[in-house]
Each structure stands twice: as structure tokens, then as C-alpha cells.
Length: 237
Image 1 (tube, helix red, strand yellow):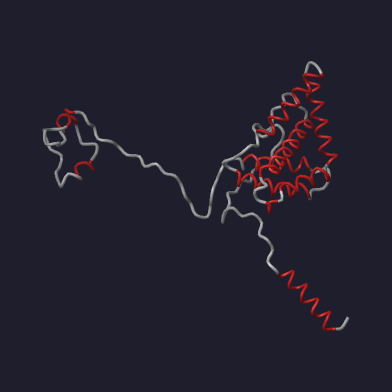
Image 2: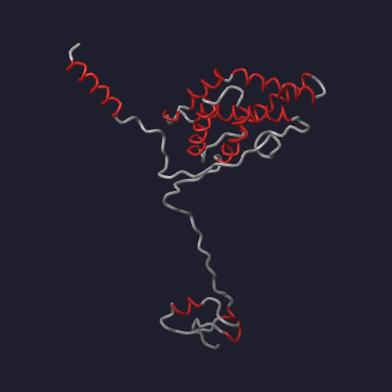
């Protein structure tokens, strides 16, 4: 290979590295900040309640709840391929299989321990799973949820094995927050409602010339009405 050929090959490689790559999903110029404080399995509203659960069972519930959120994202967020939610979720299942299996086993033990029969425990476990998945269903906040779940999933995938409970504690509040819809944050916008007072329409408050009768009804409470009457001011009736 000549020096010229080597130089051309190096130049081509540099051009490939410098070529623009597909941009990751960016729904807004500035997205809402859904971040939240670290939590535990005892925090209300984050996972399905487990009365009398041990610390280990609470952590298992958080891990499984995070798994459910990422599973929902893998299904709901395929409209934006650059989020990689489906591929990331499948990779998490493979890379963190042992920890996920242990979390499910711990939950199974909880429902077996707190139910009267093995069958009742299995039913309760199934209900826990169904309700956990349903709690992440979202339509109005799909952009926010998908973007957040993609970020959480990426961090989960690259976390050291055995670290799912830590990520679940650190990011569960953020996942829950993302279920509340927020739009563009760079340009403030709102749907406003202007409060307006209405004049009293009692017959006794107006004379025959449509003038306010202050003697009968007191001071006029709607001054704009007087201003709109070609300079006519409130009068006595």
C-alpha cells in the first residue's frame, strides 16, 4: 500500500467520524425537568403498597416497578426509534437477569407469606404485576415519559450488576413525575382564564334610560359599563 493510499484511507475515515449522526429524540427545545429525590420502598405512590414488607421486599418491589416502567416504554415509545427503548429493555433483561429473577422471587415470597393460601398468594402476585404495569400507562405525557424512561433505561443497562435497587431508588420519583404532561419550557405558554365581574341586572338597579341607580343599589360595581355608554356616567334614579 502506497503512502498516498494510506493517506486517502485515513482521510476517508476522518470524514466518516466527522459526518453528522442522527440526532437523539428531542421533542422540545427545552424539556421539563422531571428529576426527583431518591426514595425507598416505603414512599407512598411510587410502587404498589406492600403492608408489612421487609426492607428487602420493598427494594424488590422498587426494582420490579422500574422494570415494569421500562417494559411499558419499550412498547409505547417505538414511535421514536432513536430513544432505543425496546433494544435497551431487551439488553437489560439479559444483562441483569439474575437480579430481576431474585426480585421476583422475593416478591413471590412476600405474597406467599402474607396470604392465607398458596393460590391466594399467586393471585395477589398477579394483581401486583398487573396494577404495576397499568400505573405507567400514559397518553397525554407520552413524550415526557418516553424521554425519561429512555434515559433511565440507558443508565440501568450500563449499571454494574447488583445495582438495580440503587438506580430504582434514585430514579423512581423521576419516572413517576414524567407521567404528568408538560410541554415546551423554553417559550412559556399557558391556557389562561380571565376573571370578569358581571353587572347586577336587577330591574330596580336601572332607570328607564339604562342608568345605574346608586341610591337603590349602592355604588356601581362594574365601572366599564359606564365608560362604554358614550360618556354617560352613573346617575341617580
